[in-house]
Amino acid sequence: MTFYALYIFSRDGTCLFLRKYNVEGKSDNKELEIEKKNMFGLLFTLKTFVNQITPRILDDQEKEPIRSFQTSQYQLHYFETASGLRFAASTSPNTSHVQNYLERFYRLYVDYVLKNPIYKRGDPITIPGFVQRIDACVKEISH
Image (cartoon, rainbow, N blue to C red; front, side, top):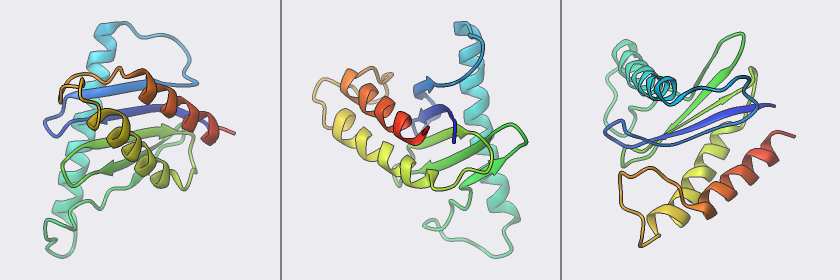
């Protein structure tokens, strides 16, 4: 499996973290800002659409039926916490078990970001320990 990117969005759509791996070319800041907005918009729209076309009424606890979708070039995996924090990972197609890693990334977020007294909620995540642990997990995944 090849891991391409990890996005973490707040409940309101602010991109708190974006880290790319194994991606050709470089993007400037304007392109990255557009990409972040497009990614959040895609996730929000997909979740809304799937909930609308589901054949039965879902209660609030069930409203997260999107786990991933795939194109010929990549697969996008999605995990949303009860508090509305959204994790999205882009990988090579036909990849499984990424949900476990997204949950692991969330646990790292809790341990290194939320429990950090210096971190202000809603700010971009730049905590070195968190970034190092994420990088280590991605290296483990991309074997």
